[in-house]
Length: 477
Image 1 (cartoon, rainbow, N blue to C red):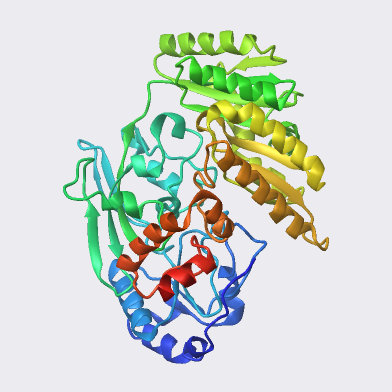
Image 2: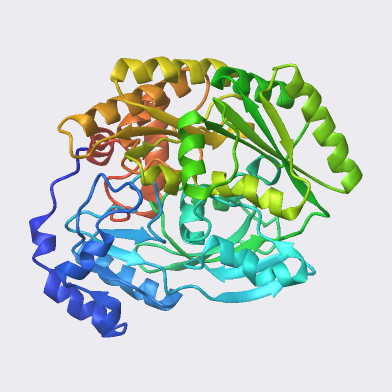
């Protein structure tokens, strides 16, 4: 993975920079010791690492503003970091950059149940947002697999979704407003407390911008009433392609489950060993959840069962109580941790039209044999957001490079069939050099022109999203 050469003149400013930062925030919030900064050398894409120049942990929007103003004045790049769960290298620093972690920005600032909103600092974890409102019968809908740890800041940066995005949408559908600090320290309010905020939809530009435009410190989120009831169904199949065809038929029939999750045999076996969820012995399984009254749930699951029956499932299991429902979801929510105990892996994030699932799954199987690397598939099948896990051995010379080539081939396939490079993990460094596959030069220039407006010096989150050759040409023009 190519990264730009660090700026030696910036690195030489480390002591002066640390002193200026400690003048505007507590000394222990500025981390300079190399042993301590190594905690921030990578995110969830741990194959690539680089310790930052230093790390700062602000506790308020004002401190974030002071940090960015100082770094802007000194020409020091800044890499925003939520909880470090990004799987695309979106929070990996460079040797001449400052990590700005938002973990201490974790307060609930306001709840308004009448208007169904909650305002939080963005270091707060995803699941704890629901935890703050569930006693009143509300929840926050986006639910990434890392929801126990991932921060709202990262969810906004990557426009994260989760298992239930089929019905409730992703972060952008549940984000109403933000407080954002620009690179020069200017604090701006974008959006508001309701869906129809006045002015241009700048919120849509910010959500999914991967820390390229500013640091979001506060967010106003939409909260929803908990559904009357919910029930998952587990369906096993004798092949990936058949399971994919079943998903396509469910969507074509106009049935709208709250979630459709896919797991193949390697993932099923790993999750069963890890979580003891009681999954069947099959080549692929779907977890399909529906919501509503008991009558509505029974009706929807009956329709899904009829569609599944046309594909000769090896097992159909409907949860009959909360314990059974929890066990069905236990394995799926444990998938990435379970696979991590077995192999090093690279998790991809391509998105495809649902009708292309059978074809793409078959091609991934063929490519697995061609590259000599195993793949485990676990993903949000309802919206075609695929998460193939390419298994490799980091200690085997050449294995990582082969994994990268295989991953690039899968993502190119996603684009070829009408999909895109990323659904919710972001581009980061992982897919940066594949942006040419998705976008032509004019497309990339238009996107980089937006960054020019928000961050003219290109100091925020360097070497991410935009191909290095394209960004160098754009800035030189």
